Image (cartoon, rainbow over all chains, first blue to last red; front, side, top):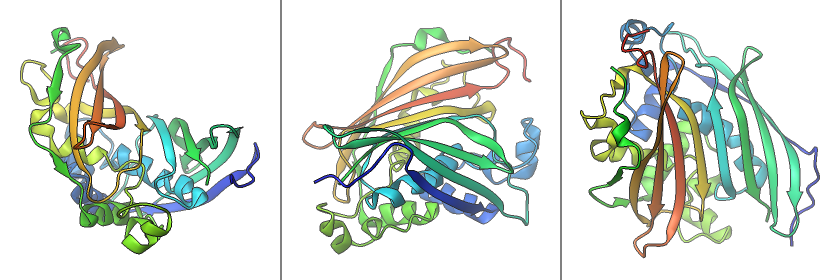
Length: 137
Length: 154
């Protein structure tokens, strides 16, 4: 039995604060220790404005809108994004990542829904073409 | 230096299996602020029909770092300077959810290397399979090597 889901149904919204501490925690959990994600001098040295969040951290926190909505962290069948703008995380502050989604299609036969996510910081998109297919229970 | 185009089509199998534990899933879920109890608690996962705690959708990114030394990205002949790399695109296709207890293998293939203005784009496709050889997921990563298309740094 598939739950009632319709095109246009909203996911979220969700606001996720990211600080330097969150980047370090994610570095440890993911194994991605690229210094652009924690070392300001290094980041500037390679032409970035400051330390930036791991793209995969932004993608990962945005997926919470999917898993919250599905009620099941294993329900995401596919998920893809483009990293269109870095999430710059200055020292001593938290950056607010805003996530909202919409159901764009429902495949009753397959028991899945297609979802578009909008992921932004200060009103500017940081992920582009953020789309997922979620299995409905 | 431009990247070595001869790498397109090369396959790099990981040199070991990745054993997915309850704790690595918990740590990864916690780092994302994931709140679903099925990421943390085996009983909550069992209530959803899973044999162990369930990994968040982007969890398999840990494999690319765990097996970084077996990746084409670190092969000096590719000519990639990792400090110039940013992530361009990422896609996950889950053939089934990843749960604690899975023993996974990964094989990465360089699908494409191309110039895009001053930058270069390298696309890696990683197939993840379980200990029975069944497909678990397909990961497609496009990385941007900034300013290397012309041989000059940006």
